Image (cartoon, rainbow, N blue to C red; front, side):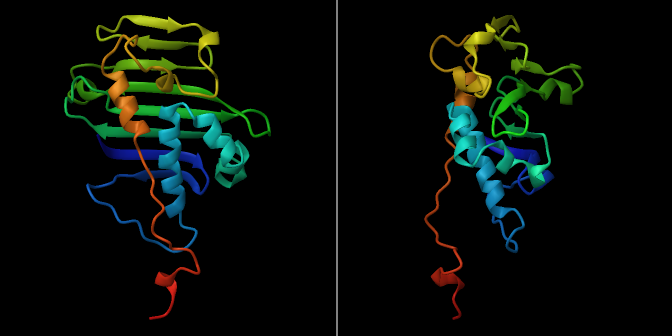
Length: 203
């Protein structure tokens, strides 16, 4: 899976940002321009797929510390990917987390996993959906677009519907591989670039 674009809203220093990565990417910039926040956000996406989103948010200080300028009410992203089977595999995942009151808690306000290939070609007006979730319902679609409505009490409000869809009971074979690829995003911190690092010292 190759990321074609990532749109981020309301996260730390990103009021609204669009990243369109290439095959190999080098991120450079002055201190405080958002390099680390982009990496943190990729880690957040991975946590959302693993089922450890709540732990990731709380480990970062709660929703208040993750929101843009401390003022935004939600964090939202739209992830678009290139798939090997452009008309069958998911190519679009979006998620919105809404802060609850002024505390550190949140709930998932919207979630969608879909394929937009036939929308782009003009064959369809609406995308092929694999799952969709709002605060009031959670729906999983099979490969013929038949729906399975998940009982409200079965889905935690602070974990994604995507993260719960694993194993042989899933009625759409394209969902688990997508979830596994997102969960497989890894961040390595083996290169010291702190202020005292050797690479920052005068030659």
